[in-house]
Amino acid sequence: MSDSRMAEMSFVNPILIDIFSHYADNSAMAGFVGEDGAISLRFRTEEEFEAPKGCEQVLSLLYALLESNPGLPMGRIYCEHQCEILRETVYRLFMVIDGFSSVKLTVTDSSGVTETTLTQTKSVTKT
Image 1 (cartoon, rainbow, N blue to C red):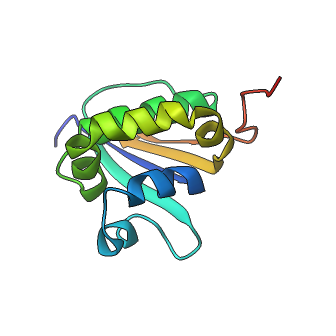
Image 2 (cartoon, helix red, strand yellow; image 1 turned 90 degrees about the vertical axis):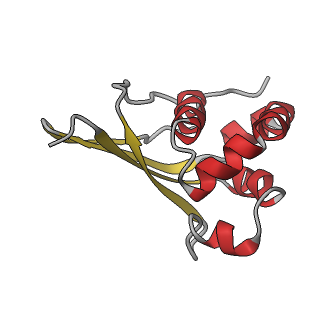
C-alpha cells in the first residue's frame, strides 16, 4: 500500500467559482461544483499538513493541493492560469476569504481518517 494520503475538501465560495469560471468551460466547472453550489475536490498528497484554522489557511491549502495535482480538472485549470488566478484572488482577497462557508476537510491515510470542519470560517475582520 502507498504512503500517499487522500484529502477531500468541500466548501461553498461563489467568488472562487466566479474566478475559476473565467478559465474553465461549463462542463469543467460542473465536474467540481455541485448543484448546490458547493465545491468538492479529492486530492492525492504525499505531504503532511496541519488542518486549516481559518479561511486564509483554507485558501493557501487549496492552491497548494491544486498545484500538486495538475491531473485533476481544477488542478489543470489552476496550473495553466496560475498567474491570472492568483492576481484576481489577491485583487478580490477580502471577498474570497469572506465567501467561504461550509468548509470541510477529510484526510485519509494509513493511520485512519481525520475530519476537520471550520465552524467559524470568516477569520478576517473588516475595519
